[in-house]
Image (cartoon, rainbow over all chains, first blue to last red; front, side, top):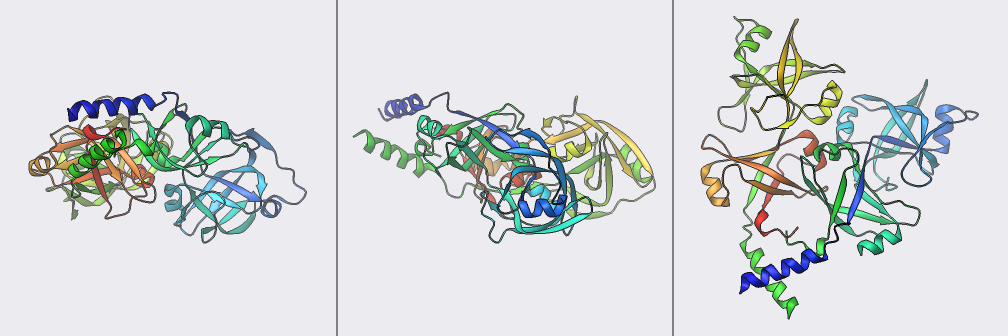
Length: 214
Length: 214
């Protein structure tokens, strides 16, 4: 009898799983968002930056120009600059990068830079110090209010995302951010991508935390 | 009524969870196991290798000597050599390392080297080619038959391991290997360690796949 009940409940739970509850995943390489002031210092006031390509999030793009990150233990060249300019310079790197550079930045949401780490940024022969600018980006999902409604998820909710691959992983406590300015996409960094054997085009599957019995 | 039943079943499932079902985790840095022949070629027939330290698995140790890995795109210096010598040289690196070196080795269990990748290995002024030697180690758990009995797990079973940290992750399809020569430990590589915000001393928690409703 108990067995039959469990089966019935499992069936009901499974019935609630929408097999279209998949989310495109993008692996973000290390990059820099520069403030207008830092951009002018690094490239010159008169210099006109060139756009290389648009990114998946509407209005976001990558410049053709690149910078070098300089830490106490190492240097990383050819780091992408994303636009448009932000109020404060923000450097997003992986733990692997942090080890190369010799720093230990916190895992943070974008924009939360208080007490984050510092680095020097170089372009050409100019070096600036970007104080409290460096974070390891906390994995997150961008979605529109319409996606959120479809998934029955609200802004700032934490979800689990399963990645099916040769190295299957469930990312827990993934922060959902809802805005009409967004496009549906989960962002992970390269350490997370490598750990999950991520390849371009791989989707994540939402696991509703409320029905998990883990 | 249904709600009460679900609660009862969840409670019963939770009662079955043994809170001592934790497993120590070790992050393995890139390393090389050399064949006797390759060791003699790299260091000379007369040379006596020095032991640096014992490793967690009984009988395994690290030499003081180190080698350089040379791939088509890059070089990694100071790579540890583990002993004792093996029948066939095996190089274990991360996906991050593979990208630096410019190769794309398969994710494999130790010892399964057929059609794996190749690299050059250098010590001093000697360079050898280690054909079909390079893998990305598949994450796994070593345990004794006694541990296996305690966990009610059998050799070659796949389990899920939850790592609780600032970046909580569940590693799925983790291979369990049981032998009286082993000591209880889960081995992950540095990409996996970074993705899970692993720090020395962190434990993993076994999730029994049979009771998961994910």
